[in-house]
Amino acid sequence: MLPEDKMETININCDLGEGTFNENEIMPYIQSCNIACGGHAGDLQSMKDVVSLALKYNILIGAHPSYPDKENFGRKSVDISAKDLKESISLQLENFDNVLQECNGKLHHIKAHGALYNDIARDKRLATTFLEAVNMYKKRALLYVPYNSIIADVAQENGFQILYEAFADRSYNEDLSLVKRTLPDAVLHDKNAILKQVQDIANHQKVVTINGRSLFIKAATFCVHSDTENAAQIVKYLYNSLYTTAIG
Image (cartoon, rainbow, N blue to C red; front, side, top):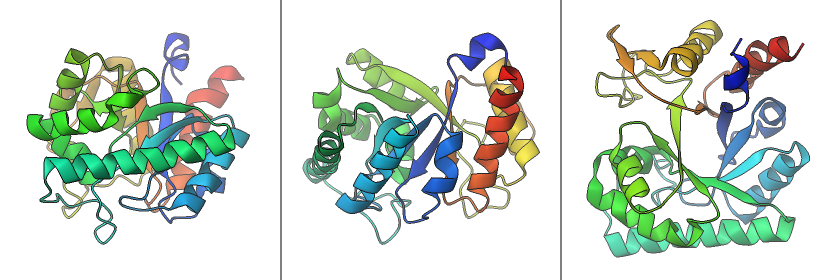
């Protein structure tokens, strides 16, 4: 289990509204969610459905904008102008914000999806474009960002509040980037291995890479992807291991 001081700050988050239709199974066992805004998946109805479910379970609500690329589920980098990318992200967030207002929900955070998340972590130009697109939400929402990334540095320089995120169900490279999904063992499925990765990062600020090297990392929120094969079982196991035992 986590120490009591970690219990107050850590949360498990999940990317939802992406057509996996397992939100009902996942929602009771997470603390925050990132809801697809129509760029890589989702539409107004799916946003409304997942926001309503999040409100039912008192889950922190986040927007999950991406490259406008449903064909590739937002998991491939897109050659797009800064102007068009900014317009797309702005529209995704505007639609999501309208749904929140309709449902009387509150925006807690914004987290980029997929290839956009990875690209703004290492490309200052893209990071700056992304921050310009989300600037109007600066005082309303945190940004979920990876540790030791360009987006984290530029966001803080521009007055954004950030929360470091790590991935519970993904393997890491030596530069703290995620192992490409096309490679073996990129996605973790074993619940005990996933729990250990979360505990190592939360308690010891370290992650063991795909090559077995232990590296320093910080995170206060941990993502489980809803399209990981056993996602619902993973989040339930994490919840029971990290919270239920400690509370009971």
